[in-house]
Image (cartoon, rainbow, N blue to C red; front, side, top):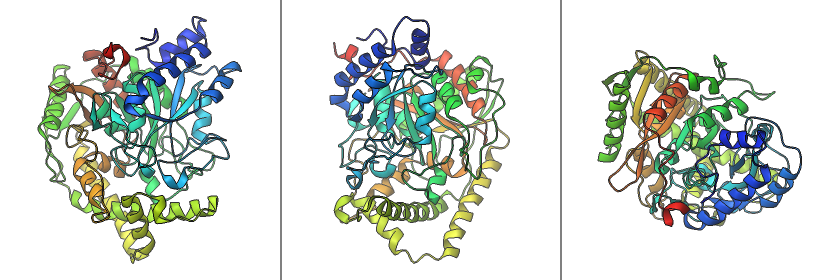
Amino acid sequence: MSEFDGLDGLAMAHLVRTGQVTPAELLEDAIARVEEANPAVNAVITPLYDQARAEVRGALSEGPFQGVPFLLKDGGAVGVAGTRLTSGSRYLMDNISKEDGELYLRYKAAGLVAFGKTNMPEFGLQPTTEPEAHGPTRNPWNLGLTAGGSSGGAAAAVATRMVPIAHASDSGGSIRIPASCCGVFGMKPTRLRITSSRRHLGVSARMSFLSENAISLSVRDSAALLDASAGPGFADPFQAPRPERPYLDEMGREPGRLRIVVSNESPTGAPLDEHAVAAVEDAARLCESLGHHVEYGVPRLDVGGIAGPFAAVTSHGLAWDIARLERQTGKVALEEHFETATWDLIQRGRNSTTTIAEYTDGLAALQALSEEVQRFQQPYDIWLTPTAGTAPPPLGSFTSTPEDPTRGMRASASYLPFTTLINVTGQPAMSVPLYWTADDVPVGAHFVAPYGDEGLLFRLAAQLEAARPWAHRKPPTHPEEKQ
């Protein structure tokens, strides 16, 4: 077992700053942990060991995470010049980033040392990480179950202690779902909290649902990383409201007596399994024991109306992204390059007969739904729900076939009764690992705050972490547990 096992990123950085360890020692330890744990879970699909070794031999930024090993999700805004960026797709297996992405540059400025990229589903379209290009990421608590998606590689890496924190992104639950499945902490920030620059894989309407951040072992690491990476880019047309104070400062502040509304039923009408209900009710009891006011309620929304507009934005946006990639790479996109469900979405976007007016009507419907959610939540400080509709399902649960290319998307919709809705509203939300089933599988609790108020979530998360710590819980695939 590593002598650094169980330390979060800020603790590791403290050791570096005080001269107790070198960045090179931390890096070699992290590489050894990846080599030990990765064969079982398949979290890291692109090692960047030599590049990282060269980096730690030079002068690292003296940021809050100075010398801390870090993993990047294999897509999005974290392109690294000269390295492969595939977004989980065969189409991009030979795609090499020409320049560093803005978010990667911010991570470097924070002192992080990126030494690999983590697995994700093709273009982040599924709540499970099973890309044909790289093979499935397996849940560290039960290798037959999903690790969640789309940031499943990141969550599995943190759960097995390869790293204490890893980059992740979320456009329908892609931070929170894998955090729930793998028993770690995942925070989706407010829309536009971090620059929306997406030059590496295109910019489309579907990206308006996206937030970047991380999956972490500790709450304070998530707060410190958001402090280091938040803020607009120089060309961003919009930005989130400024926080009242640094997020790390929220760790020492009491949340006060919060008004929490709890939903143990789904507003979509999709059934919740016994584990999802047990997890949210357990979290509600914990909050009540901490002095918060808790009551139950379910928003009466036309959430069924989300499916059509969300699918339209996704298919049109994906088709636009692929067209842009064809121009950038000079590589014609063919059916053989993509998974069944992805190709079906691309074709629907390309061949859609939707008019501009109908498409805009769909966007307006999503905005109206956001307003309804705000009205439901307005009397309360926090909305508490299950993160997912079920405990982590078996691998293969979201697989589509040529005969039924939309099977995976339909299964995803019933599995995600809450998280996708919060990507539409743009609110900050987090999955907190407070509950494990009798079979020792984690099921997260999902906390949603008003738009722009990540600080409230961090204060509450720190309180929950102190009341019911989770960092000591290690999955069977952890090297210590296998001995």
